[in-house]
Image 1 (spheres, one colour):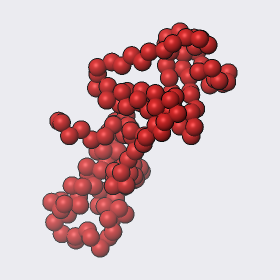
Image 2 (cartoon, one colour):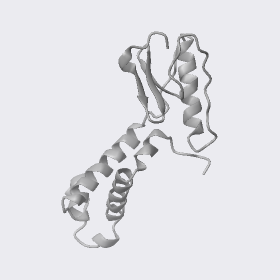
Image 3 (cartoon, rainbow, N blue to C red):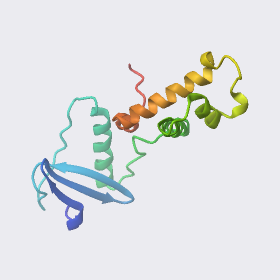
Length: 154
């Protein structure tokens, strides 16, 4: 923390926010007191729903401060998840612009895959509706879930 430039530390209503750049990685730190030159710091982690992410971030910061490779970011998205999120946002945009589920499905999956009949019970209609709902969930605050991996223990 000794090398923090003035622009990397900001005071806010809830304390002090600092951005530590160690190597090519930025670490964001929250402090209750202003940073001091000779102070020793302790990481306090709440045992809440975000504990796993907080512990992983604290470990990455500790490793970087010790000159070790911090390891991969916790929230790296797989290509499949990135494509699904992109499709959800596109589907929501199209629906918000007045598009029908059928026209959205044609744009996302190709017109040749959409049946002329039995559209109401077709799998691609169900998938399109789910994509729009997932897009809505992202807009309503579900975007925080992007930082968390899918839980296997549920």
